[in-house]
Length: 145
Image (tube, rainbow, N blue to C red):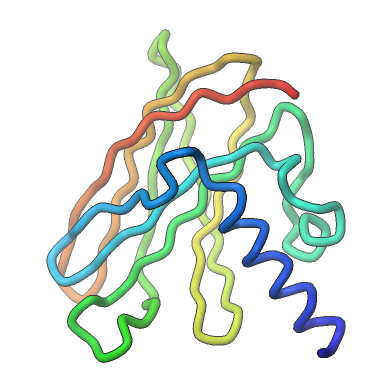
């Protein structure tokens, strides 16, 4: 296995292993499943964070979105327009800047968010693909480890 393949496999494994307790988080939007997770950036290894230009910090979280086409054979990941915001408990909003990451057939949309200890956010993520639009909302509390 090449160094690149090992890094890709490690990144995917890290993302999958770093999901919160409710591991299977997704929302249905038309024929699409939107899988989502958020976790501390420190869950990523330094090599993976560097490769994907994600700042590892006790005060930095990561939001991960994947769009799956359930109507297509094999349920492939598909490209979509992903945007969103996060609002904390006192109403301060932060716009999320998603970046697309492609690894073989996998497509991820990653955004980073700065946070304080025990800061709780309500995320609103807008998804658009081929005329299908929808939104998902979820909450996450981040802790400084």
